[in-house]
Image (cartoon, rainbow, N blue to C red):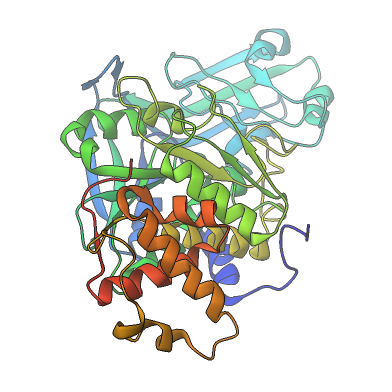
Length: 439
């Protein structure tokens, strides 16, 4: 197989890289000013509807947390030098740390310091969302350099009742049934795990907004991880019955090849379409089965909801060494990888829109194609025989039970050739598209 990505940087790749570069310095968490600033920048690119929910609201078995605001944080030695400084890198503070202002000896401070001995020059990313605690993260080399001293420890933060916010971009289609793309917006300065998903989703939305005549409506969610999807599901229960396909967009900028994690259902239409597209692109890829661990697919695929949601990424969570560290920076993401990821998402949505079940309106024996000029319409083409066979396959299996993808796979004919045949036959009143979801 060929390499996963081209070495050519296209205009879309550069645009997405530029958006990541703009968002990278912002300190985000599951609530707070960083999320609001991020959504504001996204709304300058695409139409975005902002939603909010108050702290303390019950959502299924969870409660919307208090809003976290961080202004400054540092550890100073006895000479007044900042040996750890939030303003030098926002990963230095454990996200959601409680306020503290005290003086500690190193032995007292040490339980609140986190490092990664395997990567001594990288700052790890840690959170304390659902327990009141505080802490700092630093390079292991910097930790080892600390001496037994009196340290001034300050985290200028607040945890108070406020709100959790998220954004939605809705692109209407011919029907109200939806494809949902969800990406998380809650990580601080992490370029691949967080910002690449945002950038690809924004560029995807631009393309969909410019497209004409899509079959499905598309909803793109920009939500905090875990609690954001739980909030969205809890507040949109009535909408769930219109969701036909879903994807979690994450880790889309690193140089690794594409990975698809199937939905809980395993053989839902979204699973089959993604795998078909990945096979057809002739790049290296991997497909893994669902497990109840990872990103927000585990919420959308929880047993009481069980929506057909997969996760399409490049290198999966935890499988690239830079994951959740300061090394997940602008050097890790590549414009050509972003472009390649975007192309896969575009192709998946295009195929979902073209797929469907059809009913043969002349099912009593084979209809006469010649008198309708259908043979003449494909005459002279180098692939005329294949397109003629595609018409026959579509007519024979358009019984309301088989989708075009079913037919393409059974016939061994490219999906687009089968879909083109279905369009021509529909135009000649030999087929009608069935309403409702594919079985």
